[in-house]
Image 1 (cartoon, one colour):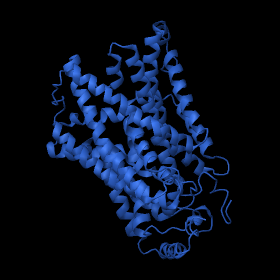
Image 2: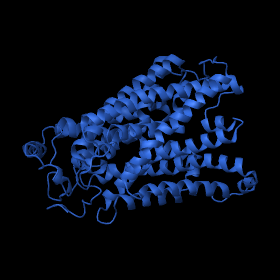
Image 3: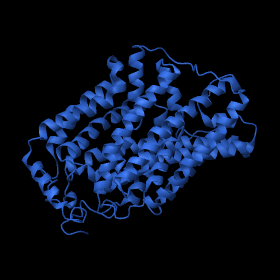
Image 4: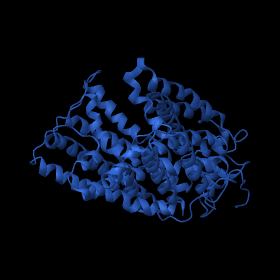
Length: 484
């Protein structure tokens, strides 16, 4: 343990990264794993429900992902420079112990979706099992805590497979991501060719949609905002991955190819396949597993189901596994490391029976929707603090000290907490109140902008902050001082 570091704040997993093995390809593959999922597949086609045409949806996707690319670089650069994960980065603005607030909020969102995504991946396992062993259908007729015996077995299998990624921590995860994302592209490519051939290379992009309740212009900007919100979780904790990048250029290049280029290409493929299903099957099918299941080939079914199960595990690891592992380790560093944090997250995801959460509109809309609205204010505070107020100057060793620049009052920065409270209330109100439904798609932006403005106004004349910036800038002139 470094000199001066507190066991209440430090362990080897939270410490600044020493081995920078996540180069361009690993970060690019990480984005493929995040985007190439069942949720990513249905997201683009789902925007038609806003009442937009094909070109309007496409332009909204382009605009949204360009904003995501711009914002994601902030989190990526901060992680790459400091070498620390999200909960430790949050200590800069919220305080050494106050950072547990943004960390645990992010962890709650992640653990809930971790369980839900694991359950969704188990659906593909059930399809495979019933195709190979039809007699297993008898195991789908009972009910225990809302799921059948076969459902439980499939869920536990996917749940256990993810725990294997804990063996060597982030290095095992990197190796998994390196092939998981490209594997989905290969299957999607085959699926596109299959649909186009069977549709006679003639498909219509007039997908059925809803009515633009508040006008087409509003629907366009709502679609753009929803695209950004789709990535709101990783906008906070992308630094968990970029901290292992060897250079800022590697982060920028991977984000460019992994976000705008890859996301737009995958969205186009998703819409093409969905549109083609009407010509081939007489109805629009939004679930690629179901499409594969209709192909009269056991090998096609197995390949597709396995691939999409892997794809769902891929996004689960990126968006919902790594973050709570670090977040829980941050809460009790002397007792919980990355592996134990991941195990605790997995156990919680198991006992909450995620299929019951997913099937409850109240839970999805109120609990997860409300928590999701809080991510915008957290992003606004952390990023304006690091890039604007501190101009990227941080005394990294003090992030692990109880008497350093980031201790504030008892480890809590009251200004950041107040900024969060002031901005969180309107963000949640806009997200959940039916009377303000026209603004719900913009709740992330409302919270992020308001929080950034309030925190800047409250902290710009803070003498302690100015002193820490000067000290950090001075220490950075001596190589090795900040990251020692």
